[in-house]
Length: 444
Image (cartoon, rainbow, N blue to C red; front, side, top):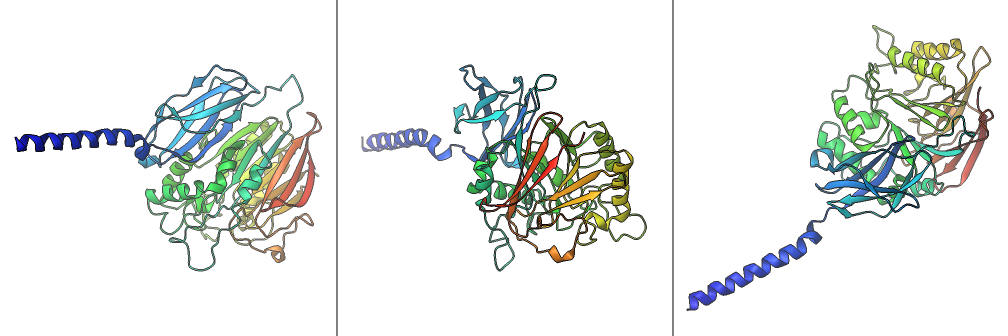
C-alpha cells in the first residue's frame, strides 16, 4: 500500500511538472525580433522587407493598405542558425503610390508594432515626379570590447542613427563599411554573421531601420580585412552575408562579377558599384591596376548613357574625383580613373554625382570636364567610426567650405518640377546640427 501511495505521489508531481512546462514553454522559448524590421528596395508593385530573430521560427508579413481592413500575408520564411535567423520577403501585388501598414508574424502571432512602407508612385505622363528625401552615410563602427583593439573605443556617437531617423528620409543609402569585420571574424562564416548581427542589433539603430527604404554598397570592412582586394579568399562569404542582411533589388548583374546593382527612385537613377570584388593592388607591376574593372565601367557607361535622370547617382566605396593619390582614392588607379572620366566626357553624359565613403571625412568635389559638363563627388564619412583630418592632404576639386572631419551624415532632398529638379544637400553632425548646405541643379 505504501508503494502505491508513493507511485501516485510521484505521478502527481510529474503531471504537475508537465503542466507547468506547457504553461511556461511559450514564455521561456518565445522567439523575438532582435533587429528591424527593415524595408529594403521599393518599386511600384513590390517591396523588400527584412527582419532578424533570435531563434528558429516560421515568419510571415501581414500587410494591408492604409485605411483598409483587408489584410494579406506573405509566404512563410523559416529562419535558421546558418542564416543568423534572418528572414527576407518580397511583398508583391501592391498598388503604386500607396502606404501599407504591416506587422511581423512569428509562428502565426503578431510580434511587432504596426509599421509601414510605401510603394513608389506612378507619376510618369501624369504629374511631376514626387519630391523625396534621402539620407547618406558610411563607416559604421559598433564597439565590442572583447574583440576590439585595446585603448579608446573607435566607435562613438550612436545617437546619430536616431537623429537620421528624425529627419524621416524616404531612402537611406549606406555607402560601405557598414560593418567592421575584426580579426576574429573574417576567417569564418560564423564571424561574418556575428559581425553583421552585432552591428545591426544595437538599440540606437532600430528606429532608423524601421524608417523609409534602405539600400547599400560595401567597402573593404564589409568584404574582408582592411584594404582587401579581389584576391580575398572569402569573398563568397562576403557576398552571401551581404545578401542576408540587405534587401537591394539585386545582388549582382548578369554577365558581371561582383556586388553590383541599380535602382530608380522616382525620377532619380542610382547605380551601386563594387570596388572590391575585381580590385587589384594599385602598386602591381605587371599590368594596369584596377579598382572597378573595365567590364563594370563599360556597364556603368551604358547605363548612364541610357538614363534620362536629372541626377545620376553613382554609389561607390572610394573617392573618384579627388586627385590626391593617397590611401585608397581612385587616383591610385590612374589609368582606370582616366578611362572612366574620359568615357563620361566622350558620351556627353550629364548629371553624374558620385556618392562615396571610406575616407573618414566629408567633402564635396566638383570637376568640370573639357566639354563644360560638371560632375560631382559627395563623400560622406564617418557615421560612428573615428574621423580623419585629411584637409591638408589637398584635393584640387574640393568645393570650398565643405570639408568636415567628425561624425556626420547627409540629407539630400530632390524637389521641383520635372524639367527643373533641384537637389539640396545638407550635412549634419552626429547631434543633428546643420554644418553646410549646397544646391545642385538637375541636368537635362
